[in-house]
Image 1 (tube, rainbow, N blue to C red):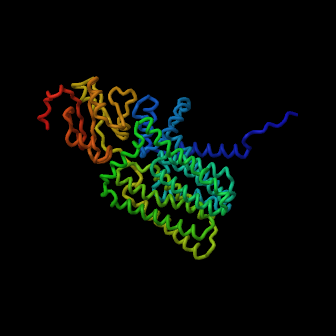
Image 2: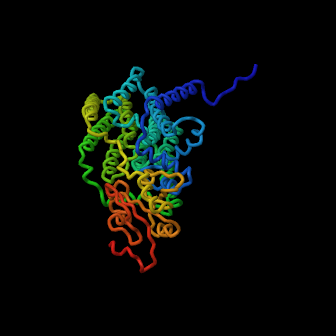
Image 3: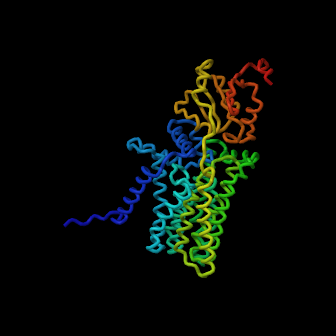
Length: 494
């Protein structure tokens, strides 16, 4: 008889993979609806890179708002999806959500009780319908990539707490490093989680010799991916710290009025209740690793959300990470063993208060806290129609990632974009061809209110620019003019 063929995966593992692929398809076809503004911008970045455009390469590495990892995944999916009739954005998010669910059910199966298994899907349904999908479970949002990366990190660290297997520490370190490619909030969470994990590992091992190599194993992927961001900026933007400059400029003109919104204060109180529950549970239960890691989420996400509102930037991954962290909180709480009756009663009281607050507040919110809408734009057809009357060969220059993604032009026949503004480059280009410059209103959405060049052009113009048309809301269309030195006939405009 021929020898039996040994497969790399067992039959049980193959069935498990097939089951979660089925869940992915169910999420793809029956749950996910429209795309978020952030995902539309990531898709524009990926398409521009495939078209060989400069601004796409710049946007991939030069923005903390729109992290590189979702755009990179869309680029990976671009090839296979030329054959399959599927949406790359929906498939990416469906896979991420299915992976998050698989980690949740795996933890429940390993550490929870059998009768608790149906509680997780019931909780998902209650949060989805009862809280009006506050955390964008049905939205095609790139934040779910961040959530999936964090779910992998959390899963392996919880497993390490129970069996101290080195492979879980290595896998957790890899996921922790990938968080650095998921935006500003994920970077802060990654570094705080690194120090929390080291503290818990030191306490668990209680041996200096065994602990000696742990910081290196856990920290190398984190430092590598963090350094990679700056290396990419140096290579592509010729500026190591380019990705930080937009945030620094916005910090000088923070929109403090946005911080007083009632929706924002309600969300902050929700995070505060969750943090209080985690502190109580960590003090009195045996699941200190998982609970303290979640404390980093409930501490940093509201701060990131708060400052993103004030800076008028996209709070990358906050909605999806909040939804995942809430489910992880309930999950870890369900299989925690408390060492005192008082601590358990305090934790249950806080848990009930958190749930009651969610059911009372979220359905009554006037606007979804994590939903973003594209500000009013001048239609591209209106811009081209006006220019074609006098300058049919002219192209419109756009600056900044949000503006470039709002006017996608894969052939660059009418719109050409960059992330960095250099006046001398634009003037040199205007010598070779007729150029127009589109400047959005100085309201902080498309560029910082105190941008040294764009805001100044919007307010005072330049002697080599002619304001041809001003649209509603403060949009300005300038034409580049380059008269000989000392013979400018535009001085009277000043």
